[in-house]
Image (cartoon, rainbow, N blue to C red; front, side):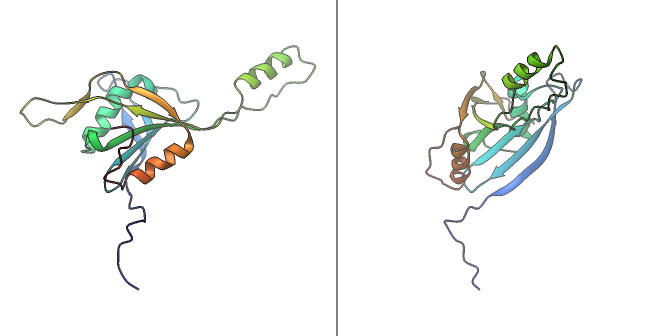
Length: 174
């Protein structure tokens, strides 16, 4: 058995896989999201997610502060980091009403409208600014403007994983 490196094999390191706590109100209202950081040889993929029914600050509301905290606390390079939001699929609860109940037709319509959904992915494009203060700071970079959200298909999300090890690939999210 040889110990040679296969250049075609994905070489991805998991930097974080779990909850990430954040706040947009100086710690007064802590919130959390599921965070996965996958680092390849060339790029890093950050995947944010919150379960359905989560009560607290949502990812879109806190995206500027959240991505700034993730980037700076993990020492990531904004030029080589891709942010992605994953929304898990939903399955509505079953209707537990008798068919002769007066609100049964409305419950069926509501269940149909807000019915099951597939998981979805959104690529988040951010414009980063370097902190210009000469003193050592925890915040090296921060987001300048509101980000751009682009829905993508799961196949494109999988291609982002492949791009983590490609130096020459001009992948989206930069």
